[in-house]
Length: 132
Ligand SMILES: [Mg+2]
Image (cartoon, helix red, strand yellow):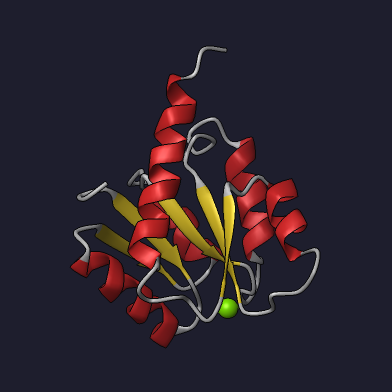
């Protein structure tokens, strides 16, 4: 969904810039945060359509932040996609258990990323429309 707002949470500035540039080029509006505290401060002011969440962050880790956001009525509906460098067995399950909608392993597939984000946004919108 071009024009959708994506928050990229990653403490690695190079990674954050790479992902942000790729998605901005694809037409997304990008917000960035280097750690959980910065992300929380941003989320008090703006509501992104999707969050890309690095798992390994200094201080509060990405899965703990995800659990907090999923426990908060204001942020619960925002789809969160985990990003991690350590693509180990079980990480995907941990990400889903924390409330993530999906999981992307680093290094990011630069050509696939915009399409992957579009698919997550479409899935989230589809889920909102489903009768309960
Ligand atoms: Mg990190």
